[in-house]
Length: 275
Length: 275
Image (cartoon, rainbow over all chains, first blue to last red; front, side, top):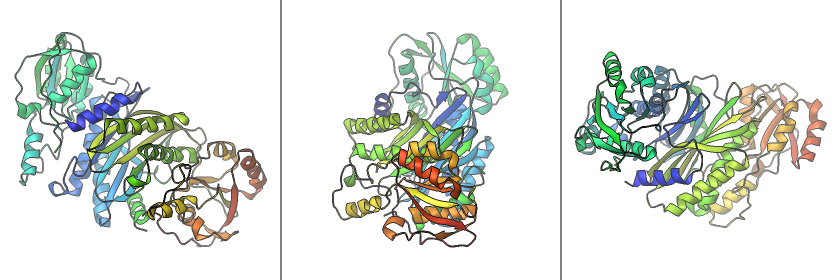
């Protein structure tokens, strides 16, 4: 809870009208920034340096993808432990650059400092002529999520118990729904990526739009509380359901409708996913 | 030495042509990012939260100012210690926003996480139709710095010995040379802010431009090794010396010419200023 409360408190104390989405939109340019910090988002023993750098870049690019924007440039600030070796720095930069490049994004700057831990902060500059926002939900809209949720939480629990997980596990390799978002954009009312878990993120979406929900599906806690999924949470007019199902099928994207937007104040039991 | 070596190693291992200046320039937009981390850039007992937030923003805006750009937007990522109070978060955000505002800059986004320490990463998006770069020095150019150097190092030494320093001390309140840079721009060949100390930053400037220097003035180590000054290091054609002196006088900017650019490989004895 702590994380979300403090973040919300801080967001509320800032005055800019641009704050509240995955990225700030100025004209056709979107700006987003996320931290990927040791002992907050990962433990060193859980991941190789390549995996750390790759995931840091993926979760940042996810903000752009979630808003139907194309990532163009990245800035990376690295806090490097003092005992880090040159070849380890190379592993980090190689993974950062190659991951960015997969999405058409170039690292153009940043900062490097010595510290006690390995912390990454990344800023993504992206472009969109039709960004997908969090606001705009209407009564009767349907809420759905992409993909299969739950794996990230299961991965995290395994890691915390000292177990190994597969190198393709979602905790290492979140799957960004680039093609789905692009094709679905004009049929969507709102969208965001699922970083704090379906429960918390749906609550956030309903809070911003001042609506409640009616469950169309019972969501298991293993699904609702799984954070860092980076799947999409979307809201749309039910008239587009069949079109969206088609796009989901074409793009190999599982799509689950789980709730309907109503005028009540119902919320999910949101709990922080951070360890 | 560690900090600079690792940073240089990392910069060298990145492939973008945009890397190497205080900010990356894409069209008329400049992007810069700097970390301001607890126990790397400051200790909590040295500064109030307001001072920490203000300095973090100032040193970031300095990158834009040093390139003759106007800061427009900022993204701030905050790692907040778990025991931080709501009113303390307010102190931080108030100082961040008011400092940004002084320079015409708006905080439009960022990220907040819980961590063991107070770390800030800031990205500045700025605009310039005539950015001042680090490259372009010519043989015979003069090198000069603005302001009075040395105070930041003296402040740091006092703080490390447990002494108090004045609340207007340079370590708390770096002075950005906005007006001087703006007026002097067209008479300057190169420029950068002095963050690692005059010695180290002059070496960096000479390295990039593949020149050496001839001393016109003996620089004391107390001056040359004083980092985080955020004064300007500039290079210019000697024909502009009188014009620049006039601009310096008009804008209340002390200006000290200290070296001449030559074809040797002379460097200063650069030592890291980080504690």
